[in-house]
Length: 256
Image (cartoon, rainbow, N blue to C red; front, side):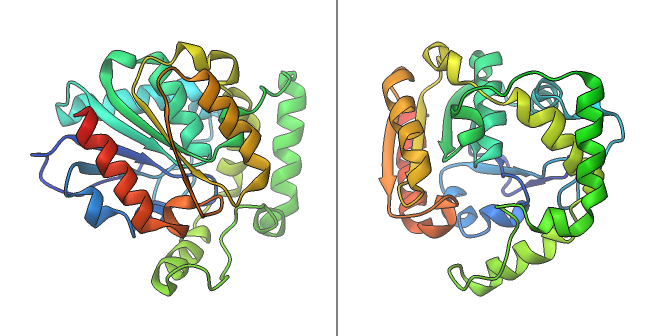
């Protein structure tokens, strides 16, 4: 994974994991404020931005990502750190919190149907390979048709929107095929929400109507969860950057 550290490590580390079709640009508007209370550690998913695109499907398993996060934490010399996941990235960080609760001081998640929705049915390896090959065969047109592929909408600051669009051109088709067929089916934590033992903040973009039943599920099942509802959509940290930053910095200060 490509890794960028924003700060000198004197403040507690905060791992930031973006969602599908995004990049380090996902956190650009938030970094200055978050860096006032933490040392942001920004990673890019495999096949995204400046990260590598391994050929081995095993590299895309959720537990392989968890191992990478743990290796990064160890490399930084942090006994514990806070974590924050956006969308697909929240699926990875939720699973990380379930696997290594003693290594995580607090976690923040945003709208994430892949992690809070029901698990996808298992398929055979042959079916998985067929689906991956079919995705690659559709080419860039298929990638750009994905719901979260960045497009210029005029809703975001022009510099952030431009960076997201440019970085989307770096996405590897092969890596995305593996992400969809290997990583996504392992993301759901819906059946284990009651096991979460880490202080948790859900920052919900309530304009994403389809996510609101899952927001209510998380509020009911995650022990001690705090929920902040903002007037944003799926990328709530971009739609409502100021309010997102305030919620997260307050939460991190309270759980430090």
